[in-house]
Length: 103
Image (tube, rainbow, N blue to C red):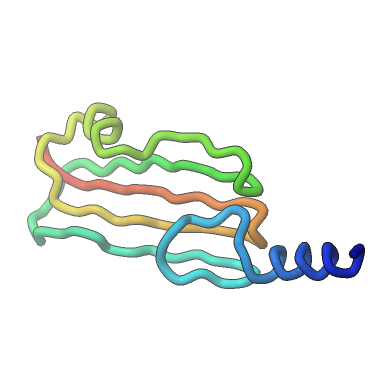
């Protein structure tokens, strides 16, 4: 019984990310990606970034919603959106949303 539990825990540790950004490519040990989600090609005057964080997949905190970002930066017209992900060993992960735009 102990061996079965140990195998399950090791499998979970190495093949299932406890803390993960939730999308995009994932590395077993380390992940750092930037994904362009939306872009109009128009020049922008303002840029703002906000992140959400996860620790062991147990605790998650932060606010990276469009409404929060737009109110924080006074952007009314979004011209570009990028997502950046970062994760280490399923221990820590974050997802950052960056928007660019104009008033």
